[in-house]
Image (cartoon, rainbow, N blue to C red; front, side, top):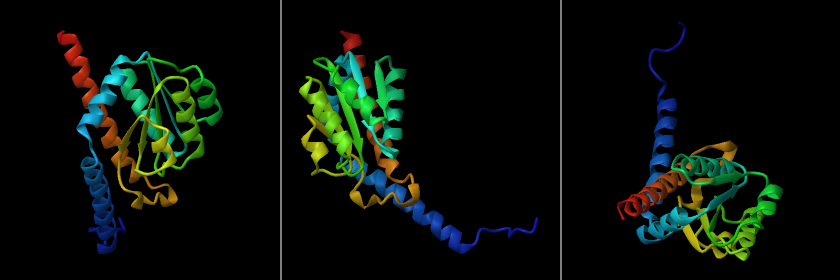
Length: 185
């Protein structure tokens, strides 16, 4: 009704570019996968009595996705997007707990402080980030790398989440393997 029956080439080019960017993010995340590290993190999660997750902005939404997945397999997991609350509860973590910090840049001060507090309390700390060299990585016992830093989340684009979702699902596969092995014993 008054609209072209075909999508203009410029729109198709934009969609193709979006597809290519998302596929590239997925490929980078896959290339960054360290199976040995995933197994260790999966084992730490399986043995945990509590998992706290923190991220700001889009990273907080991603933290909530992982918390949801962990809850679905029966683990106690809480995601925080409020820095004050995250810092207050991180002090209650200890041996047998896991803290996971999400940050695209690895530079988010509140996320770094969350992991430092959790580590000081005795929790296993995990960074999920796009930057291999960052303060967040230094605050973590384990680092799971997603996509590269070229992701530029301008205007709130969700393309950086593709790599993070791949990391989450890879982690859930590793956790599933550990849980299945413990049931078989």
